[in-house]
Length: 75
Image (cartoon, rainbow, N blue to C red; front, side):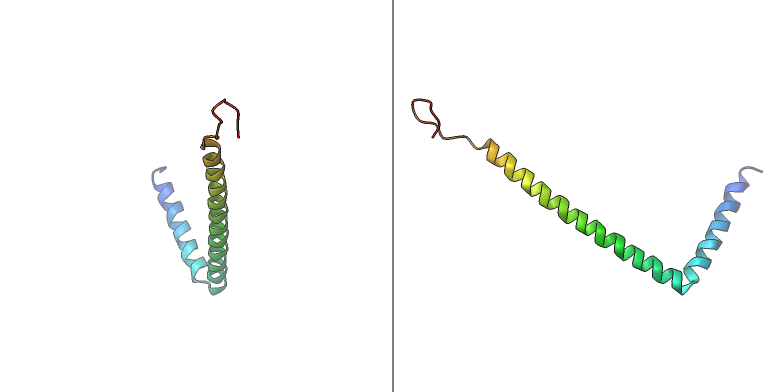
């Protein structure tokens, strides 16, 4: 009895999905939602790239050796 229960639940979920995707209003809303999520994802990805570049610049500037006079004092 229990092994057939997931099959029945899966079939019911499949039928419900087909019914929902068949509705034009819901399909339009899903497409709009997908576009919104993709836009926010790309916005976040661009933000992370900008922060990464800033961090790389700071690390690079800290790694560069400071110029020192022959007597050991900094310029």
